[in-house]
Structure formats: C-alpha cells, structure tokens
Image (cartoon, rainbow, N blue to C red):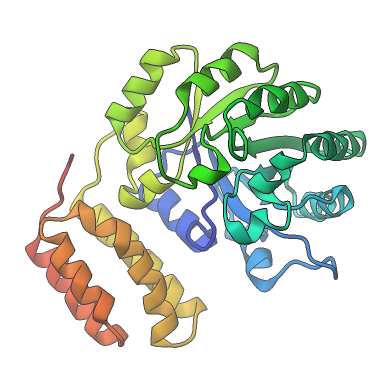
Length: 313
C-alpha cells in the first residue's frame, strides 16, 4: 500500500515535511501545498522555499498547482521541471470559498467543458507526469459521472479522489459509493483521500476496496504524525519521538520567522491537533492558546512532556 501526504495549505510546508520525514517517515510521496500562478509569473517567497531542492532532500515531493488557466499551468510546470520535478499535481479539490469563486480548485468542476479543454491543452504540451486531485463535484454526487469521463480521456499519472462535494467542505462523510464507481470505471491509477485517521479506518476502507493500493492522508497526520508508519504496520508514536518532532518544528520556525507572535501562531495551529495525543492535552492546549511569548510557551511544553503520557487510540 502506497501512502501519500496530502498538501495542506499553511501547514505541511517544507519545515513540516522535513521534520515528519526525519522522525516518522512512512510516506511514499509528499505533496507540496499549492502554487497559485500570479500575473508576474514568479513564485512567492513561500512557494519558492517550498519547492527548492535543498528543502526537499530525501523525499519524493510533488508540487501542486492551483489554476484554471492552461498557459499558467504549463509555465509553472516548466519552472518546476527546472528544479528537477518530474511530476506536478493539479488542484481540483480545494473547497475554500475564496478559491471556488474564482473558478479554481473545486470551483473548476462547475465548468466541465472548460475543464476538458484545459486538460487537452496541458496534455498536448506535457513534458512531465500530471496527476489530479479532485472532489466529486460541486453540489450533487451525480456530477462525478461526467467528470470521470473527462479524466478518462487523459493519461493521468494518478487520479486522487476525495469523495466529498465542494459544498461539504470537510463535513459529512466521504461518499464511498461514488468512489466505488471510480474504482470500477477509472482508466487511470486511483488513489483514495478522505478521513483516514487510524488503522481501523484503513482496515474498513481495504475491506470495501481490496484492490486499492494507494491512500492519501491529511488531517489525520496532523493529529498523529506517526500515521503513515502505522498504516504500513509500524509502531505508534512514542513520547521521545513526539518531543523530537516538536522541537525540530519549533526551532525551524524560530529560525525562519520573526517575532514571537508569528512563531506561536504556527505552534498553536500544531497543538490544535497535536494536543489529543496526550493525557490532559486539552488543559495544556488552553494554556498554549493564551501564550504571547515564546519563553512562556517553552515552559508549558516542557511541563507537558515531563508530566503527561501519550495516548494510543
């Protein structure tokens, strides 16, 4: 079973991916949060740091592109090829309203004919492997039947399906009946994405889809950074590993970012998910949320790791 790390904007950047690889690994591919081509044709500072080869040593990284303009996709893919990337991923899954209203991400699914022309154009110019990460539609699951026919016209490296609608955001449950149709009719290699948070979730998925050989995980990794390893039959996270992971992230954020407030914003985001791994984690998370200075934050975290134990679900 191949396990992929999902691209989570603002979270799974190069610092997070590097620490995750060093402490836990378990992933066959690490997808880089989306690059959004701009009018000047340049990468933003964040995007450039994320794709630099020296920031992705030892990982098979795949950059994701968010656009509905074929020329922008092609030009961005060319730049990424200069960095040594052999595969790029098209984002057709982001459900964010700010993205969707511009007809990008899951919003592009509302215009299947235009999407078809877009794919035709980028595959004519293709010099790289192209994979697609998609939702099953905007508002009705029946939309996916026509979308899948479009995807089947092109030699995708992989079709990664998150079987939710755009309107679902991250609520409701993934529509496994629609994914079953994809498993039956997709002409491209298929990868499942959505709500795989532990070994039991994986077991249920594999019982329903015994031929499935590829799964992408996202939010589940934020709550348990050892998830990739666990899903491959490895051991659960140990406290010493979690301490090392935390410290790698914290030090790297301190080096890259300026000001306590900016660093603590990143760490509070981490602990929103991370706190569930520890006894009394919620109590400590409340303290962390109130922190305004790094020195106080460090004291709280030291106390947590000294006094609390890891919870294994």
